[in-house]
Each structure stands twice: as structure tokens, then as C-alpha cells.
Image (tube, rainbow, N blue to C red; front, side, top):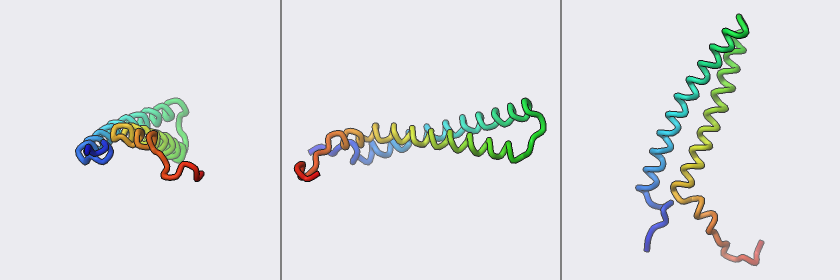
Length: 97
């Protein structure tokens, strides 16, 4: 009997390695965007409170990292077969809802 793809440790290890690679690249892109936004704010608005720059950097950075992590997890669940397992799920007792 074949193991489902989601239970295969090799497929799982490859999927997690791909997720980490995607997230590392996304983190570098996020850092570049945060630096660019901070520089743009400093040039466009002139002198401002340091709190503006900190809040902007944290807000933009956290939002981008959260979005990247969630998108990466979508790819991870699709690659490992978890999406198909949920789609093909049949309850033990279909009359009981």
C-alpha cells in the first residue's frame, strides 16, 4: 500500500526546505521595502519623530512577513497533499451532522 504524499518524510522535508527558502527570500525583500519606505519618508516629509519611522517600519515589516508566511504555508499544504486530504475527507457517520 502506498503512503499518502502528506505522510512521506522525504516529500515533507523537501516542502519545508522550499518554504524556508521562500521565506528567507521574502524576508530579504521585506527588509529592502522597509528601508526604501523609511528613506522615502525621510526625504519626502523632512524631519519627523523617530516614532513615525519605527511605527512605519514595524507596521510594513510585520504585515509583509505575515503575508509571506501565510502564502508560504498555502504552498506547503498544497505541495504535501494536505489540500487533497481535506477535499477527499469523508466523515465516519455522514448522517450525524
